Image 1: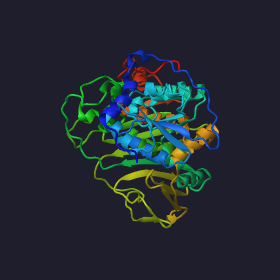
Image 2: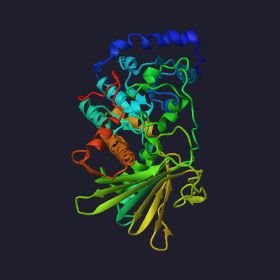
Image 3: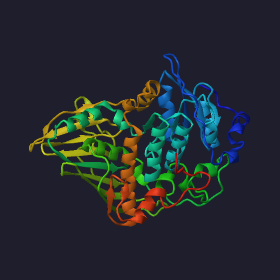
Length: 458
């Protein structure tokens, strides 16, 4: 294991990461020449955003023999120093991702920053001629997600979305069975995000901690006074930077529900809920009921329900109980109730989340046990395989699919915030006759702070 660097070593290494940042405003990245990877060449990956999910990225890549973690990037000096001491090899360190992108030896960037940075960094990475693994949700609002899809197509990049359940063989098998008629005619999918989240309380505004580049952390969002409830992890519950639990945990289950139903954009969306029980700094709802309606070309309709609950609750379809055995494997042995239920004319099927990748089926009026399975997968391995092969079609979670699922999150949050149902046109990807909703879906009602602006032409 690499020894922990001294502060002097760290600052010496990081000097190059902050020098000349002002000159990077509006930078246009010149794509690097495509590197042809030989059988013995390792993919050089940079991980950006290291505090929470980024640690999982590092761990996942560290277990892949054909990958080198070539660089680490974070705006928090203490987090960056800690990860440098944990990872093997001698990765470069960066504070500003724009400096990282000037390194032509980097093949791919893995993004685990807060949500409000996801699309902008990913677009920059595409423009720099590098491939992208971007955490869910791929965007903070609908419009910037569409810009990312356009950038991936324009620059012919491999872009994987962090909805890793799509790489689980058990869930692939379950979805295949649904599509092949195992449940008869499937008309309804229900997504569950019942997660035991305690109050975040109230946190006072205070000076920015030493070693944190808070201006860079804030990036495209409005620059507000520092608070612990606007920073590590709790940024999820602020509209400027997060999307609530629907866009945090829930986007995984939104994606599976849409995948199983075989649908893309909805025609009608409504969401109602609120911030119940706790008196704290959270802005996003902790209880939310969402409904998505889909009009199909054959004249039929499908429905998706999604529910977020934040505290003590019941379970559904045995999800979360931990006492249902799927074959020889325990199905959902934890307190939370996170998963999906699909309803058809001949039965119903329940699936697990990314930590409990199981499924069970109950068939007929007497609910006889049907097909079941349990098997996880390697989402990061799938990404690296596609980086090497250049086969975008082999991605388990291509960015277009991630964009559509994230868009459902944004549409539901928009309906909740405006207090009304939305009629959506999948062809134009606009809310019909609702300028206020379309503005909210374009910039999150907060705009973009110069120079961290999403380009209108990628």
